[in-house]
Amino acid sequence: MEKLSVSHMNARFALPNRSFDFLQFQHSIFFLKFPNPNQNSNPNSNLVRLRRLNCSVSDGTVPSSVGATDSSLVVKKKAAEVSSDLKGTSIFLVGLQSSLKAGLGKLLADALRYYYFDSDSLVEEAVGGALAAKSFRESDTKGFYESETEVLKQLSSMGRLVVCAGNGAVTSPTNLALLRHGISLWIDVPLDLVARDLTEDQFVPGSYPEVRDEQGALYDKYRAGYATADAIVSVQKVASRLGRDNLDEVTIEDLTLEALREIEKLTRVKKMIEEAARPF
Image (cartoon, rainbow, N blue to C red; front, side, top):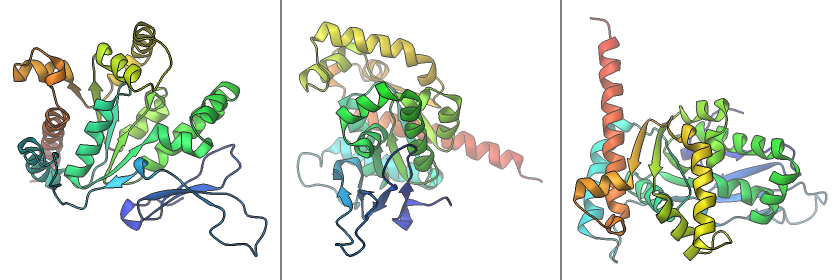
């Protein structure tokens, strides 16, 4: 498959060992296309529309609601400064799943006028939902990991994306190499905040202590993979730098601005290396 940019609006995601043909990206919406044995039927009847939430792109406008705060304007200003050197390079966010990580990803995509994707959600949608994905993982672990890798492979072949990556992105050398197609950031959120987030929103079953222990085990398991990221955006470090004792006072805008600063550092270093390599 040739490499495509999202500007072509026609990227296909072929997943192994599944009954469908591909995921097709078209007009900011994903579709699953299944084989249609009846050639005389409605040509669109074999397209299953996926949630628009999985993909979004900014139109460059600033909302007139609560989102149009001074801090969000500062984020947009910094994004404009970073954008020229970034040159459409995709951004991959790793770390434990949380609303802070997802919120940062969406705001970052909006500020840079990038597309936003959640790789875990894409795999889940492709196999029929969260329950089907869980069953698939348990019955065919190898096939599930291959599906995760294929989605990551296709996303990494594009530009102008912010990808909220799942833990599968840091489980193998192949996947870690795919992250090198862009800039990777470890969004380091304290376990207490992650567990409270998941418990309050009922994303996972169990009490707060149980969820915290489960997330702690995941953190220990994947920490080495997270640490391969190009830079870290730490909630605790941002809070300390801003002089905030309460971590809840750290906003999505604060974290996104920190992410943009780290991206700016990385692009500057890359530019310096490229300039140093030029012949006299």
